[in-house]
Image (tube, rainbow, N blue to C red; front, side, top):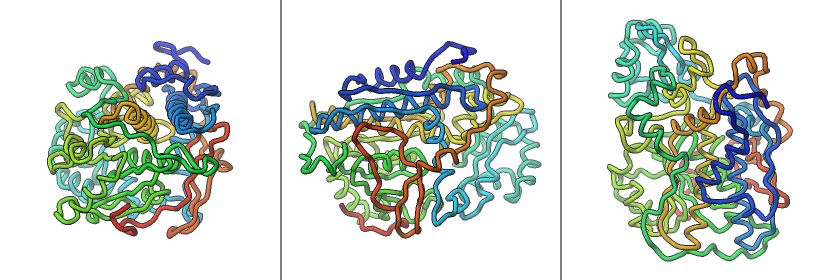
Length: 477
C-alpha cells in the first residue's frame, strides 16, 4: 500500500475502529472476516474504498453474529475494496426496463444545476437544487430564473458565506467551500469532532425482547421476523432500510404524498419494501402511524424537525418501549447547523473533503460522486443490528445516530495519499460490477440493481420484491 500523506492506516485499522464503536469483535461470526485489496484504486486522495470496505465488513460481522445467535451456522465474511467502491456508485448501475434510474429524474436540471459555483469573493459554493422547493428558494434569493448560467452570473455578485446564510435561512441548501481546518474550527465542526461516528445509546428501560423463533433455517435470514418502519427519503435512510430487507426484515416505507422523492430514487431505494402514504399532520393518519409503530422493531428517519411535531426519538420510544431508532442528520442534532438540511455533496463541501479532492480553488466531489450517503446507510444498519442484539440481551429502547458530515470527517481521518500517487489512476468504472447485478420484477418492469457487496459462507441475502409506487400499499403490517 502506498504510504499516506498523513497518518498511515489500513482497511483493518478502519475496521478495528468500527468494531470498537459497535462493541463487537470479528470472532463473533464464528469464522474469518477478510478484506481483500487496498486503496488507492481511484484518483482520490482519500481512502474511500477502504472506508466502505471496512463499513461493509462491520455490517457483515453484525449480520453473521446475529445469525449465529438465532441458531444459524458460523460464517466467513469477505469484502473487497474494489466491490466497496462499486457499492458507493450503486445508483448508477440500477436499471428499470433497461433505463438507468439516474436518467429518470423528472427534471434533469435539478440535478445538473446542483454544483459548485464561484462567488464574488473568489470562494466557491455548492448550491443544491435537487428538489423543486430547493430550486425555488435558491432562485428567489438569487433573483434569477433556474438556468445554470443565470445562476452562475447571479452567484458571482455574492459573498459565499453571505449567500450560504441567505439560502439556508429560508430553508434552502447551499454550503460555501471550506478547508478541513476551517471546518474543524467552525462551531458545528468542533461539535462533530468530539462525537463518535456511530452514536449508539440506550434511551430507556424495557424488558428484553428475544428474537422470534425461526422455523426453517434454510429459507431464513438474520432479520427474518423483524419489522422496519422506514420514514426516510434519499438516500442514507432508505438504503439502510433496503439493506435490512435484504437481510430478511419486513420493511414498510411511509411518506407524505406532498413530498415525494424522484421516481428514479424510489426505484433504487424502494426495492424489497411496501410503500404507504402517511401525512403525520393529519390526526387520523398520525393515529394509524402510531398503530404501525407499535408493531415495529426499528424505526428509520432522516427528516428534519420531526421532534417539533411530536415524532422525535424520545416521543417514539415512549409510545413504543423497546424500539430501536435509527436516525440520520447532515450536521448533528445540536449546534448552529442542527436545523439545516444536509446532503452528501454538502457534507463533502463543508468538511474540506471537496477541497482535498481537488483544491480550494477547484473543489471536486469524490470520483464515485456519492460517498457518505451509502457509507452512512451501511454503518447505520450495522448499528441497528447491534442495538437489536443488545435489546434481546438486556432490553431497553435504543438510538443509533449517524451524521453525514461526521462520515466525511471519519474518512478524512483515515489519511490522505499524495496527489502524485493517485492522479494517473483511472476513474472508477461501475460497469465492472455489471455481472453482479440482481433482478426483480414489479410495477417498474424488470429492475436490475447491485446487492450489498458482502460475501458470506452460506448466507445468501436477497430481495424478493421490486420497488412499488409511493402509496401503493396500506398503512399496516
